[in-house]
Amino acid sequence: MVDLEAARLDRVFGALADPTRRALVERLAAEEGLSVSALARPFSMSLPAVMKHLDVLEGAGLIARQKSGRTVSCRLVAEPMEDAMGWLARYARFWSESLDRLAAELEAKA
Amino acid sequence: MVDLEAARLDRVFGALADPTRRALVERLAAEEGLSVSALARPFSMSLPAVMKHLDVLEGAGLIARQKSGRTVSCRLVAEPMEDAMGWLARYARFWSESLDRLAAELEAKA
Image 1 (cartoon, rainbow over the protein chains, first blue to last red):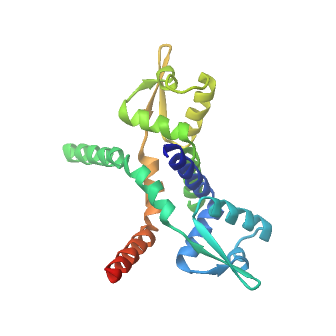
Image 2: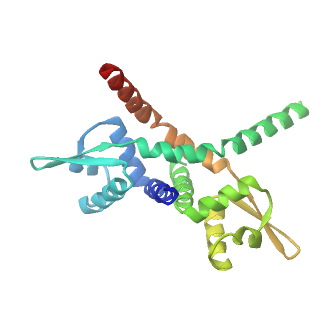
Image 3: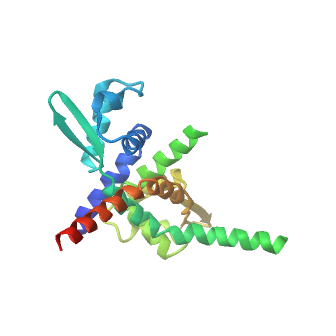
């Protein structure tokens, strides 16, 4: 169970470790059900290269593809990002602590 | 500027896409200033393998190393995780929306 969750986090963090894949997520968040070719249009890369990125996103459970006739459309599946955010949130006390410390230092100087 | 930020996010997400590296972050969050050998102890891998993971974490700005005599100690630098969490937080409305939808469906059935 723990290993399955770990593998899922690996895939989500790994999928988001690329600017093209993050841009694809952003696009799908703004516009639902885009076709693969519409998604690929703004990028200066080949359609197969974009499709490889979509494969990685799909492997991480971050997008779903649906075929209708000849068109494959994609939609965002945001839920796996919740786990990733939950993992990161555990460390929020560290950066808020350092903000508190900074604020205290600035106050002491004033 | 945007590219620098993107590269930083790439490195942070990439660094966290591995269970050993996430475990190292967890350990350093619990205990500050651990030596590299103390950090390596619980893992069933060689010291050089653990050091490679520490290199990746350091490259992402997530840990800092300090040498004192013969001992190198590591501490967590959590701030880069704040950017990653900020990026993910933009999509929180999607998973809360689907929770709302689920709740509404359950209510309609009750």
